[in-house]
Length: 338
Image 1 (cartoon, one colour):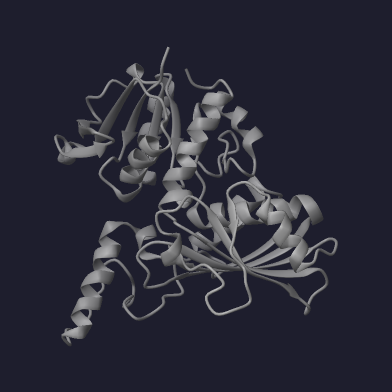
Image 2 (image 1 turned 180 degrees about the vertical axis):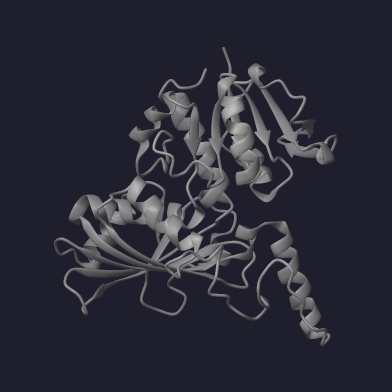
């Protein structure tokens, strides 16, 4: 018996990517449904050689599907994911709504695949934050080899992480500057074109932002609660692809060459690291790709057992849609689907 699935939020950036990746990876489905709010009902989205008409979430019968991807934001996920899970469908949620719920597994398949069996409780699996995903894919092999004690990460996050309106704002501001129009900001707090903004998501009581708290808390839940994490998250004028500078302190020494060799053999990682002009990856080059790319691997001699890395990935793919599809593949392989 095959698997039938639905996608809530099919018209958004991540929703479209999920459909594309399901098709690319030949995920076998008997039926696929696009589900959205009433205002999007009737709109068509592409799935392989099919055009799917969006169905109204209020009217859709979720008891008819085995798997539901949610790509429609935290508020809608909090409202609908428990209802859908109660109908028997396994829910993979891309929002932050359930990530820190102790009864909901938070999964990066290359990092903590065994945790997926915790989905038998609430029938919900959370997809981590995009920046956390790419960082932990790169760090898991190093942690297994030499135990990471501390992480200091600064992110350079593309505007697509804030949605289509954010991408439109960067495009409009960039065009406007060339004809001397005054940039207007609606999505971001300040001009994003030709600028960087050291602020992503809401500010918290300790002066950090919610995005920074996500990276800290999700690292503890997915990888190791004993790792000390310091995160600074910055929005940059890039359409797709997140970059991160990552500094780690390890319990025992590992050379830069040993780290390169280890990462080259690890799942989901491509090492592009030559100490020469262009011998590294950039966010633009990661766009449309599945891998997490690691470059600029070097020893940090200012601390004991320190390493520096530069990590880039397509935030809409591995940072969102691809990871969600990989979770579905893992669930199928572990007997949670079908």
